[in-house]
Image 1 (cartoon, rainbow, N blue to C red):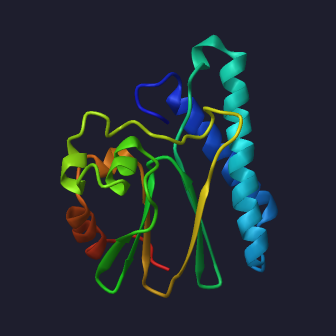
Image 2: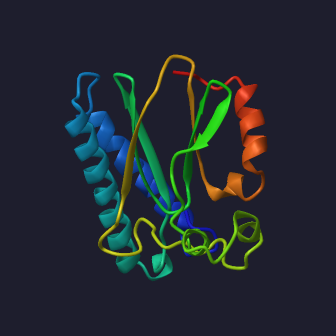
Length: 182
């Protein structure tokens, strides 16, 4: 959930419940690419609607929301969907690549050339996100697809990790790990 916001833990657990339930009920190893893409979209939209509605039902839930990153791997392709500043990294052949792009104020400033990556690390608004699940009735989701092979690793994480360690430490931890590989 969004740190410091009302009931962020409720928002995140609800999102996980809705999204994972949708996949358990509707995904098979033989699902086509279009089925996977549609399921990612519909499950995140359903989670968004549930969290958004919950925020109106209870006063203590007002303003709650969560970031989201989800991935499904079928037939050598990773289908990724995300909103907010939770990230997915891809580790292959001793290379770590950040696949997702943060939906945040500082990322927007970086893209406009008004802020460097180094300046962004300590910027006072670095935790201000521009997209989140549950905050509005509509959620704008980004989608990516990458090819994956045996031995590759995918790391999904929140800013709780990326605010504490940089990409070089993430690479080091990912390169010498006991994580499940594809």
